[in-house]
Structure formats: structure tokens, C-alpha cells
Amino acid sequence: MLGYLLVIALWGLVVGAFARLALPGRDPMPIWMTIGIGVGGSLVAGLIADALLNREAGFLLSLIFAVAILYFIRRSRGGGLLSPGAPPLDR
Image (tube, rainbow, N blue to C red; front, side):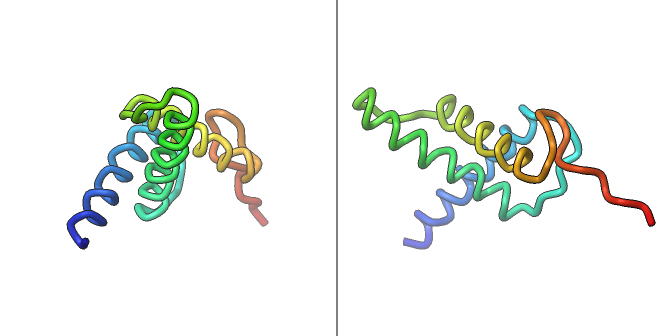
């Protein structure tokens, strides 16, 4: 069981890291959030691939959905496609 969780975390780290590389720009985010983005992208990709295509998702579809999740996280912070969010206010 522990080995399975470690494999999931490693897969999430790889997919999340490639998603962060696909959307360049400064993106301050801890490693656990990178893993979460990768695991979330893989989960959504797996559900959609199974429902629509009746097959497994694979790396590319997982990466596409992880990039989409990362994009929506940036948008929720007030940023755009390449910016992570609004700059901090200097007072």
C-alpha cells in the first residue's frame, strides 16, 4: 500500500513538474501543490478517457489536464496565462 502511494506521488510530481514547465513564468508553489496538480490532472484525464474513449488516459492527456488545472489556479489568483497572479503591493 505504501509503495502504491509513493508511485502515485512520484507520478503526480512528474506530471505536475511538466505542467509547470509548459506554462512558464514565476510560480511560487510548494512541492506538495505540484504533486496535487499532477495527481488531479491524471485523475480527471483518467475519468474522461474512461468515460468517453473507454481506455486509459496516458501521460499526454494527464499533462494536458494538469496544465488546465494550473491555468485555472493562476486565473483564480488574478493572473493570466503566463503570470502567476497580481504583483504584491509595495507600501
